[in-house]
Image 1: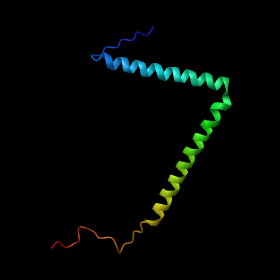
Image 2: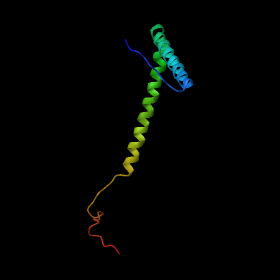
Image 3: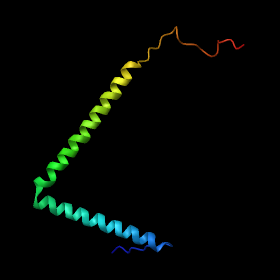
Image 4: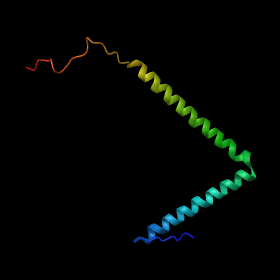
Length: 89
C-alpha cells in the first residue's frame, strides 16, 4: 500500500494543485468515455489537428531548408587566414 504524505506550508497552493489534478483526471476520463461512445466524433477533429501540425512542420522544414541553401559555406584555402602567421600592427 502506498501512503501519500503531502506537507506544504501553503494550504492554498495544495488545494489549487488538487483541483487542477481533479479537473485533468475528469477530463481524461470523459475523453476516454467519449472515444468509446462516439469514436468518429473524436477521431476526425484529432486527425484534422494532426494534419495541421504536420503541415506546419513541413512548411517550417521547407523554409529552413531554403534558408540554408542561400548561405552555403564554401571553404577554400585562399580565404583561410591562420592567426599564427598574421602580422599584428
